[in-house]
Image (cartoon, rainbow, N blue to C red):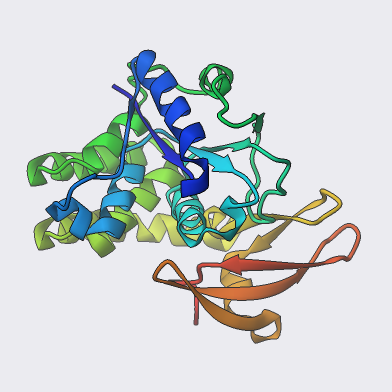
Amino acid sequence: MTAMFVSYTKEDADCAEHIRQGFEAKGYTTWREPTTPTMESILYPRTIENAMLGSATVVLVWSNKATQSEWVERHILFAQQLKKPIIPVVLDGASLPPTLIVSTTITGQTPCSDAAAQLLSHLPLAESTDPLILLSEKAAHNLIRIRKEAIDQAAEMLKRDEHREAVLAILEYLAHTDLMMGVREQAQAVLDANAEKATTLAFRLGDPRSIIGVRCRDGHITYFDKQRICSDEVTIVRSVQSAGLELDVRNLICGECKEAVTIRIDCRGYRE
């Protein structure tokens, strides 16, 4: 069954539960936080990342309280890193983060009992056979054998140039964070085999994985190269800690109205 990840802050838990129940009634699976101490709860940050890795879509319950949540911020950053579709459910008119550019937004009211119904038309099927969704599920599997199968599938998808950015993001995650060396090495080998093609594409077009959109208060969207803004000392304001991540605060300028936009961004892997 296709998995959905619902990101929320504790103040919006009722809304999140309504959405999860609505999804599950339609045949989707959703992840819930462990209620008793387990090995998964001990490895909480990794457990969340693995749940998001295996999900087809991230539903973001967004409110004024969520704007202050370090964990929600971390969820958004990780979903963007993995190129996951993000659909916000905005409860109280809170403005979305400037770096969150989405094609669909649902406007709800607490406890947003109808939000799941509104979301369904924007989601993949509950029994989806989309190769990228199946790849994500395998990459998040607890069996080493299945994760290695995911890497083989990723290699074949790259040969066909299918979902290239998302596939590379999954491989990079496995290569850098999987607990098993054999999985890390296999994922890195596929990345290395594709490095020459990726370098050629980046030289001609710029690496699409490093391009981010930033929205100013007037709604204009300007696109920036993450590689450039993460290494450009002129834009640096400071670094902040958020849910265990060190984020860089950057001042950018809207390309339309020239308004200053301050963002918080994960620059790991982009600093010179």
